[in-house]
Length: 303
Image (cartoon, rainbow, N blue to C red; front, top):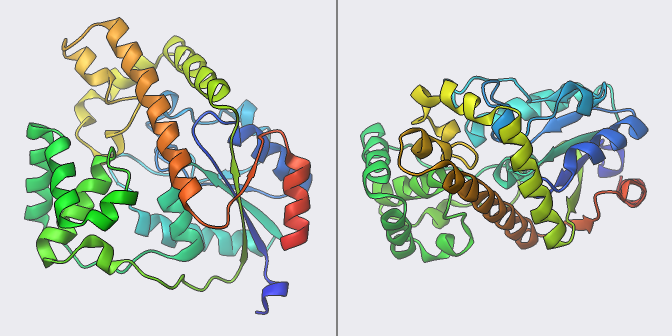
């Protein structure tokens, strides 16, 4: 298919609380299309309040895919997401000229747009060993080991994400080669063109929104949601901001005020890491969250 005849995937990326959902709903209504979520947490039906999952009212009748689509007991890797999302997009492009892919999980977005690296299989025993090390020693020793084994990857990786760190170490330790040596240079071919958009707003505004939203999450029952998930706290889906700060509170490690402080601080840090990720990626055009007119003009120009 010639590129000019290909449908368009409009990627709307950005940090947590920047305003992606509201913008994408408006764009979807104007473009008469649907939204595919690229959020590695919102696809789990058991995680709602702590992931700021959009409500039915917020979605305002716009179909959203990969929201409440899977269970935390059946983890979704980036590779699985890539396969399932491409299948969904194939169906959606049969009905729509433009489809919106929206989220803050950069790895998921890259998987769909450019393909994943061809990584070697890893011994399950090694994976379990690293998981136990992380639980017993914390993340810092694993981060340092990754810096030694693969300084190239460590410079760009989200080293606060235990899943990313342990996955890279699995490859380094099982092959004797840097994780970065397996990363592909040439993007996978896709039957659609891609328009990459990222959202940002002034940092004080973003951080205020994050703090306010965390207060609202707690008022909406985040503690009860975390209590209901306590027995699953070891699962990959729960190794994330919004839950990991609550489990120690439930264990009596620290008090309520400290828990709230950590929730807000770590959410702000998470947003900063997301912004760093997208700024380090090529080809993103940056917009304010209320500039749907500018984004539509870009789609018409590129599509």
